[in-house]
Image 1 (spheres, helix red, strand yellow):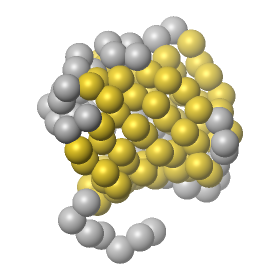
Image 2 (tube, helix red, strand yellow):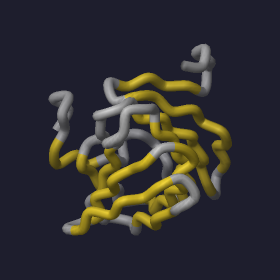
Image 3 (cartoon, helix red, strand yellow):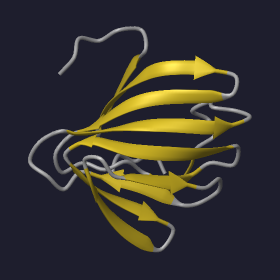
Image 4 (cartoon, one colour):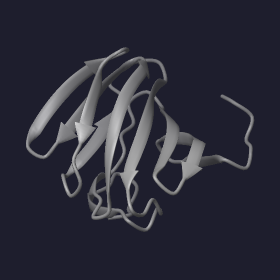
Length: 118
């Protein structure tokens, strides 16, 4: 695990590091612990592009389950229900590029959550 810094935010599923935060986009590196997943969620004000850097992921995009491995990507349209999970035995990491007019964490509508946040 990396040492914590001001751009790092720890969650029950792993953590993320903000790499870039500008008016037109926000870029994060997200690390998901083995066997963990993020909440099933959507965003009203942004779309996202996820590029898997290491490990394997299962991405839920609306009603589809999409398996991805390092080097593969998926686009998450605005308002699409989505989540990512790490089915593997090692940390999985991906880079998330957000585009839209607002990138705050309060632009998350949760539908299901393993950690009681829905």
